[in-house]
Image (cartoon, rainbow, N blue to C red; front, side, top):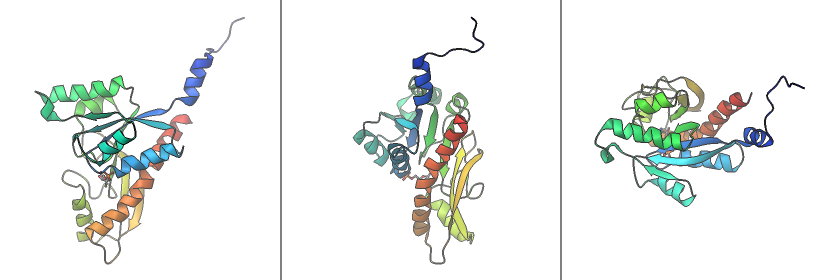
Amino acid sequence: MERCYYKISKKEHQHMTTHKTRLAVFCSGNGSNFRSIFRAIAAKALNAEIVLCLSNRSKCGAMEFAQENGIATLHLTEKQFDSFDAFATTMVTGLKERHIDYILLAGYMRKVPEAVVAAFPDKILNIHPALLPKFGGEGMYGIHVHTAVLEAGEFESGATVHFVNEEYDKGAVLLQRTVPVLPDDTPEILAARVLECEHALYPDALEKLLAKERS
Ligand code: GRF
């Protein structure tokens, strides 16, 4: 008798139901967002695994955390290559051979090469410490963002998880969450409040995306 559907093997079925989304996290610094995603996975709030920590810095909080937790690390900078193209190609190859599903930028202080953006369309996310489209773009990073928010007299700030395209902070917004700006805030105090918000937002945004894929 003919079947009018494609019968999948037990192994394929198991793979489909247990496949964990393979993440590469790109970092340059402390890596607190990287750790918050790691914790969400450990708590089974995300059906994913971090298979790679890529950094332009050989030593930073994120790379140390990855090494301590048995996550593969890749230190990659333009300086290691004769050309930018060779650098970008090595990055694409390193990601493809590890079968990366999503790239998460978490405090990565370099522009992602266009070749990588092209190789992973709609598969790269970034977290930004303000309510985009406000306070984004080149030069808007770290304490500069929070200083600009205070100087603009905003009553609220927050964090944004967005898709990455060729332009800084211009990709579609996936999820945003606000925090208040309080009268006595300094840029540092506001930065700490926003960062705490980021730690819940990034795993939630990723889960929103994965839930959409499951549906
Ligand atoms: C965060 O504020 C994030 O929004 C920005 O860089 C910072 C990274 O902090 N892109 P950490 O390295 O995750 O602690």
